[in-house]
Amino acid sequence: MSNTIDNSNCNFEQFEFYQRDFSQEVKLPEKINLEFDYEHALFRNILLTGATGFFGAYLLVDLLEETTANIYCLIRSSSEEQARVRLEDNLKKYGLFARVDFKRIHFVLGDLSQKNFGWKTNLYEDLSNCIDVIYHSGASVVYFRSYTTMKSVNVDGTIEILLFACRNKTKPVHYVSSFSIARSAYYRQKSVIYEEPIYGKGMGIKLGYIQSKWVAESICEQARLRGLPISIYRPGIISGSQKSGVMNHYDFIVRVLLTCVLLQKAPITSTYVHFTPVDYCSKAMVKLSINPNNINRYFHLVNENPILWSDLFKWINAQGYDVEMIPVEDWWAFIATNINSKNLVAPLFMTEKGMRDKVKNWKEIDIFSCKFDCSNVNQGMANDSIECLSVKELLEVYFLYFIKSGMI
Picture 1 (cartoon, rainbow, N blue to C red):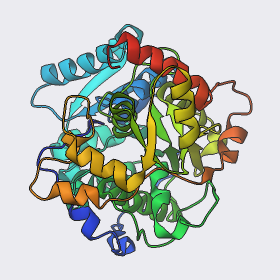
Picture 2 (cartoon, one colour):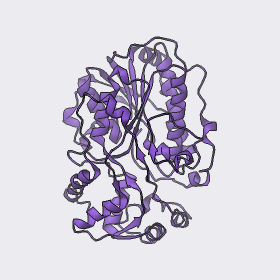
Picture 3 (tube, rainbow, N blue to C red):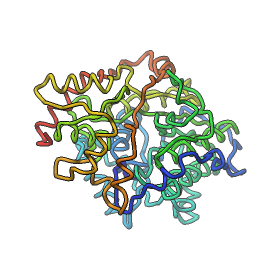
Picture 4 (cartoon, one colour):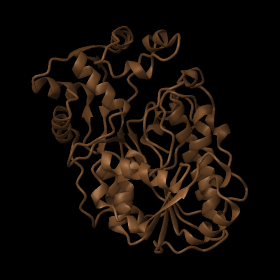
């Protein structure tokens, strides 16, 4: 459930199957349906997954600050003490520890990949009666593994969440998806992606992680059509705090950006960069979720003021850096053949025989050349003033953080 890049045992199987019809993977158990009435206003006890990740840490803090609920954190661990240490270390890493009221946190040991999260029957039944609402942020974020490897946590784990949401009483589900699902072939020629159910068959998505998120969101949509109250949130590129700049150092786009600066070469591409600060994403999601008028809707938690990749490097070079723009194919070849401490991208690829050639042949920087409609977000937060800095403003915060952290 940790939102980090783990390149151990990674492979490029997902690139071989990017034309697969993933709609065949969307299978919702018959027992998932609306059997009980529910009261959206109840926020006494919340089940939260993913609290030991980057986004999940901020989500935990905002849930504590915006509600009076007890938070039950599902954490994969061998003991409650170890779970507490994992959570505390994660909060300290992002400077959030002081904001947490641990008296309202309950540690629940479990695993999304296991049936009933691996809980004993009594615990499952007790919590299914206790929990009022679910925030499902937990996922395995291992970008370069195959769909098959990611399925147990990201797809089957989501099904387990939906089964739990139906057990004994209906619990609204707030599911954290990703704007990356729009990388499917269906959206290739779209200039704007709207806040609506996803269409197509999931074909054309290269990364196993995104394939798994496409399937999981599609399953949530099926459950919603059966009456289960589900809201789906699609964050953009979740970047560092807009206040402190603190970020997930393992994030792929962060690694690409820093590698370009350190090696002084960047690929030419006409794509947009949608850096969306983690503290905005989290606060916006919580604010939207506690408003009963927003249930059963889709929300793009995406920066509405992105920046073109080319303009990003114009800004960087204006700060005194000297980054040369070269064709994408040449950049990937450069990355594959220049392995050193400044190349933060190579370790993600160079762990298996034959990867070098595959990197050279990957002729894309997989970001977006489209924009994302945020009408539901803006309407849902009409009475809340939550600022999201433009990407250009965020760059000033982030580069100051890079410098202070010794990253550049």
